[in-house]
Structure formats: structure tokens, C-alpha cells
Image 1 (cartoon, each protein chain N blue to C red):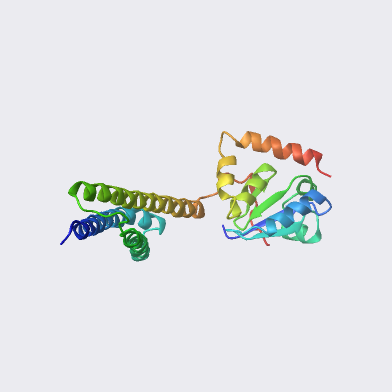
Image 2 (spheres, rainbow over the protein chains, first blue to last red; image 1 turned 90 degrees about the vertical axis):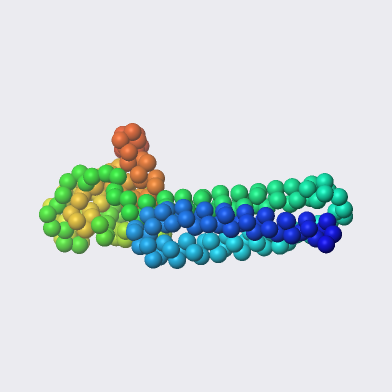
Length: 133
Length: 111
């Protein structure tokens, strides 16, 4: 097994590990937001949470797969470390971007749900007893 | 709250434009428009003074709450999907006096 193949295997191992770790963090902590958004409907919250995590996996693993190819030849260990460092750094940035996108999405869904349930900001000037229309 | 009825001055062009704008916005609470001072308004809301409803826009909720002037505008904004956030901001204690002053100024200068 040459240095190139070893580099590929290390890249795949670290990228998969990182993706699974971030996805699980998102899944575990995003649930609280979603249960609140869906007014305590845990079944719906779990379903949406699962769908978001599937999307997260697809995008990240898609990127990891597309970014696999190493352009230059890797012979020495130092070259392998340099290539890995660049590739893992890119995977981390994509994961970070996706993670913040998900947070933004949760916040947006939550604020929309807050607005939908918000009572009027003002009280009526008067009341009429029996509106007939 | 399931419905809001807006009594507006049908002879005022600005009020008619506002009505058309409100009608075309996506709503959380349906808005119904009735000309102030018309027979329908008088029959439906005998407790309200027709002259007063012609002078300042009046909104009545299906629960019987009556909102006038700036409050009427705020409750209309609150009924709209895109502007509920604005209604909460403008209806806060800090901004309500300014919103009221603005609506009164517009109301005095409308044609």
C-alpha cells in the first residue's frame, strides 16, 4: 500500500468521523428547538429532525467524496500530512458552514412559529357587546 | 381571534388604496372591509358612532374589541403574515406614541 492510498484512507476515516460527530450533535441538540417550534408535537419534531440530518449527511458526504482526489503525487509522510491538513480543513469549513446554516434554519423556523402564536401587541380601545357581523 | 372587520372611509382615495394593499397581503387573521357610515356598518355595529368611524379607521374583532386610529393600523398589521413582527415592534411601549402621532398626522392630511 503506497503513501497515496494511505492518505486516501486516513482522509476518508477522519472525514466520516467528523461528519458523524457533527450530525449527531445537530440531531441531539436540534430536537429541543424543533419540539418547541412544533408546540410539543414530539413525533413531528423527530420526523423533521431526521429529515434535516439526512440532508446534512448527503451534502457533507457528497463534498467529502468529490474532494477525495489528490492532484499532486504523495510519496513522503510530510507530503501526506500537508495534503491531509488541506483536505480536512476544507471538510471542517464545509461542516461548519452547514452547521451554522442549520442553526440559522432552526432560528428562522422558531421565530416564525413565535410570530404565528404571538398575541396582539395592543388592547382594544373599547368593547362592543355583541358584534353581529 | 378569528376575524377582523375594518370600517374605512370609502370616499377617501388613500383609504381605498390601503384597503387594496391589505387585501392583497397574506393573512393570519382574515380581514373584512366595510364602508364606514354605510347601511351595512350601521346595522352590524349600532353601538358605534358612524361619524367617528368616518373620521378615523376602526377595526372590530369577532370578539367585540374595537381598535381606532393607530391601534386599528397595528391590529391590521398584526393580522398580516409578513408584518406581524412590525406590529409587535411598533406596538411596544417605546414606539406606540410615535406610531400614534404618525397615524394622526396622516389622518389629518388625507384627502
